[in-house]
Image (cartoon, rainbow, N blue to C red; front, side, top):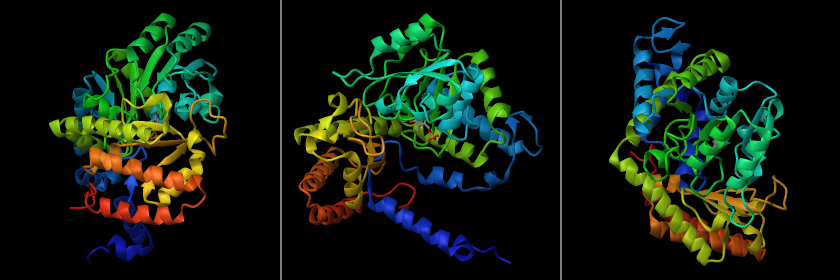
Length: 420
Ligand SMILES: *Cc1c(COP(=O)(O)O)cnc(C)c1O
């Protein structure tokens, strides 16, 4: 008897997946942490590898039947090592947050002092923010950006590090539009004897594509998700050159924190790493940055206020204060116009975190669809029209018109993984 398809077994979920496919295809996706994976990555994700338990590491498992899985995980590890140029890779963390927790588990004990960028300045929750267990279980010290430049204040980082002597220093974040100076962080970490963790979740694809300096050779440990600019499945990796750090990280991931690895994800990570090693991916990474700069230039020309005055990478942080609109209503109006962004705090934001002054956008997804500088200028124009109309309190007509124009544009750019 033929097995019944998803559409037959669960038409409700099937239809919702189809609806999400249409939504993703019809939207100009500007959320900088998101991307479209390739059909190949999508195929690897939806496989029988999800059936298998593989606690342990290749060659050292706690279950039998690993003849195939060991080969898959070894391929993923070897590709990660080659692509980033490191000696050790752990590809098992379930996602970026568990990967960072594994770093804490490997190198610190509850109550120890750790240091990271404050969430309102662009850091990640897991870098010691108050509502995260990393902020509750550890004594977290937080650095920010300079008021005048909007850039990381390296003087403050050094002062705080010397004063508090953290065990761990996190460099990286979720709303940093500028190049991160890993060498400067490494010098400070060395001075105070801290383990430097470069969290390159957002920029991993730019790093391997040569569009952002690599932390390799500077950071003791590199933590990254695989699903942002890297264009892989939802997952994460921990990389290091040190045998000692690698042993501590491996023990922290399993058995310290996790059980069986998600083998279907491991396979999809291997596929994404293969794709990221191609010349096409290098061009893709550089186009992400070129697109972000074109988008930033057009927004600046239209009177938008950008944190740090622009961007070096895939991400733009807009302070909407001068436009007379808050971040949340702006993000909601843009979403209704088919432009998907997210509201965000800006440094020194006078507003509340759930109703902040900023908007965070980025170009990884639109670049994956093949859009280039002319489309970026068009997107900036649409954003300006919607936000200007919103400020005047009369945005309905503009939203409807822009949405129609957005649909015309998205129809011309195939959605990876969806349009065969
Ligand atoms: C996205 C992100 C994470 C967390 O990843 P999840 O997969 O959402 O848990 C951690 N650190 C940084 C800097 C990130 O941008």
